Length: 156
Length: 288
Length: 119
Image (tube, rainbow over all chains, first blue to last red; front, side, top):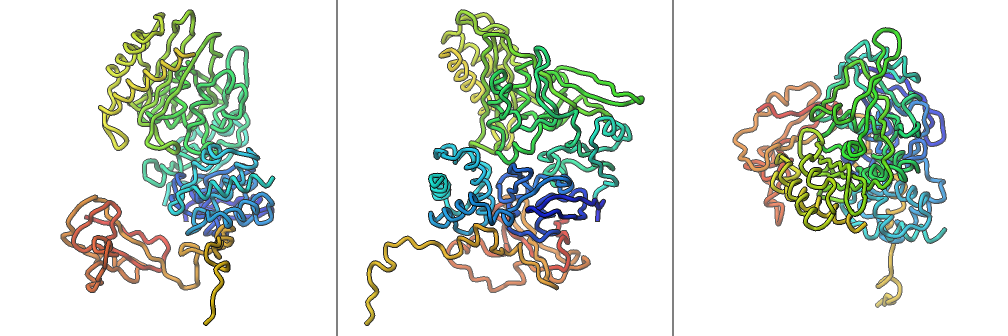
């Protein structure tokens, strides 16, 4: 393996240690080294958003980030948001509004949507659309996803 | 298999500069260019991977007299969140707003965008409109030395800059625009987000009595580096911003760019876009 | 004869049963599965947009360490696609009509055994 680096970081609220190749992406580390497969490899080049995770509270394409750069930081994946009230609301809205078909884009969409709502508690559709511009969906045509995010907002 | 033998994430500028002195270093911050370029084979790692993201001297946006200092580690989101940038350098905020996606904006840095030196680099056009200067630091002989140069001079070709291998870009400096300065930025792509510009246009000038003075026009993605539109500027400088002037300027813009045809657009199409969008931007300025 | 009342299903919005699992990231897709002893498949794709396939020589690929099986269209002579699949069989034998058209597939023990065209 190419140069191995030890890192320590907070993953889904728990301090974890990992030894990763220096050139490995955070996405590959999360999926293959740490077994958290909820975050998806869609394109590997920051175009589709299926790999979206939270790093120090901000949405990041984990496929573009170096795993070693997680050192000392706080990383949250879809698995770590199971108890987040806003995320739960978004997930329920996605189900209720038919916003899930194959579901591959959904974890990334859910994380991104919850960040949109954190910054804009009552966003209009244009704001939702702009907020989701980094997340691609091949199935739904987006309308129901936007419906779901709008519905999740109205509940606050 | 990479050539990587060492990974360092220093927390001090001096340490980073000493590592750079050793040579064969790949610098990384957000990774939004380094990662895909290493996968595609466009870039190969050197012996050392130097993560500069934890160096405090590279962070922050601040006003120093009449100059805004933008630390190299400022993310594109950081530009959007800065009241100073939004209020005093709106063309920069406008370009930042159309940069990739929020996920990319949260990771990508101004320093990275500048050093990547793409002919279509989103931040480069507005920074040149604003007459930005870049700062480089090095430690060739035991103490930190700095030098500065205009951004336009720093960019020498696609992916090429005047940064020496042992130097690190530390900041971009932008003078506060004068009173009455108006500016516009436009980027054309095939989709609303995540797009590399087929063309981009930045313009700025001081509006006085219906005329534009000290005009700066910059075109992106139509040459190996972003370029000043000298003929377009001459067509505008000091003239009343009426339909005739705007048409002449748009035509000058069309004639002075020499774009290539590539996967994003043909040369002909790029020239048409430059003319039409220059006209539109100027009409928008004229409307006030 | 049991009559299903109109109001029970017809016209009702029925949420997709697997939507909650998908939204929580729990659903496992092919790439998420990692079973002991499993093999990994990979597709060799065309870099040409429209080209005749004259010949595919898989001997070098088969000899790579860790490779169990390499197949091409020649190994699936009875492909009888219907409808749109007539233009788009699983592995292309005569022509590629699109960039990334599938030419060959291999299965190996290693995750990242490379499969590259050498000609």
